[in-house]
Length: 96
Length: 381
Ligand code: SF4
Picture 1 (cartoon, rainbow over the protein chains, first blue to last red):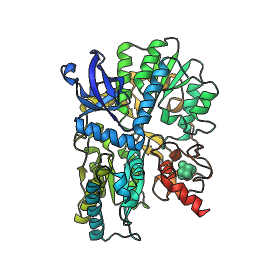
Picture 2: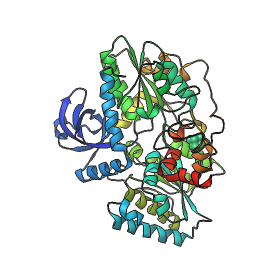
Picture 3: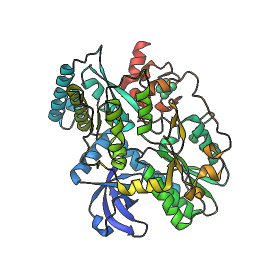
Picture 4: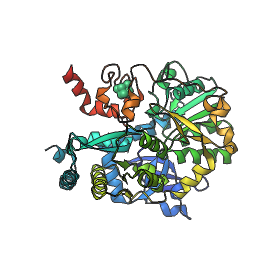
């Protein structure tokens, strides 16, 4: 929850709500990009960002993204975050 | 050698470890008279144990594990209040998975869920917003938990709910701030801290200036650090250099992610939605002035405490002492090590936690347990 996970912005999904699709370790998840927003949100496509609980909080370079992901894997946090994302999706479907 | 297996770049690690050993020798710190360095953030605590940094660094350094794990400092009364809200039939209670196993007075959220409460683990407050949109006949409550890293996410979610006029979404706000407990620790006459390793992702939001008082008023060095092992080693070396040179400054080792002034959008959202509570209770540390955030009146329809009259929204605030035999408070303030708690590995394990420091992998006791501390107990038995 406290450590962000790197993801790459692949598409803008909702301009007004400032939402984008990010790819995190091969999994796609919609995230809010208000904190890193540029005038034209489409400019964000392709950029790497640190994502905290569904919010892109900071732009990082690709190298930093790779090293951060390695450290998260070592700590077991990457797996935990991906599981939390899956749990979030099933919560929406009403699964308990 | 251990570090050769653990580090992807063992040469760089060796260079930093040599630098640290040299500095410790120059300062003259020894196992009998060690330097006490506090890593504030629970993520750093986890990383220090995972990579064995406490064993790789010389005995002249002792790491003190700070209060920076939001799950660990959540008092039992707040868990009880969560459950009180979650057990209402109209409520869908949403929470980060980390909070599910934190023990309340009678039960945890996990137990309440097993007994039939509609409690759902989510990854993000955005999931809770979605649930509220899809279930207009239910009250969706999000358990807002965490330091400044997660505070912007609930602030932005509340702003979004306000724009959409979502009447059935609210937040049970338990957001807390990092600098205030540090002041309490520094004011404690028993405290012997020589320097701090500052949190990286919290600082990405608030910047480095909120720590200025540590250097200015208390004369202690602090270095904001990333959480890769090399970041941590380099930051420890930077703290030691300041000690050797008799300096006390706020330095930023993680400048590639942490801007000095923080993230302006996040800070604006926090300021718009939240105000400081006069005081907030921390497990093990007691009441700390201005350390917790409350939803402003302008957004009060999204405040679960107001909506359901619980906690600070109730007429009478309940206070619950920590469980009998639990030494969480002393561990949290660095007075004793987790293994010195009589419950460690006996009445308190990650499977059956008694205290909150055993719940999350960022808690000092869970980190000790997971990375070999329990062996010390077995050996002693
Ligand atoms: S071992 Fe358990 S009870 Fe003892 S300090 Fe740690 S978390 Fe608290």
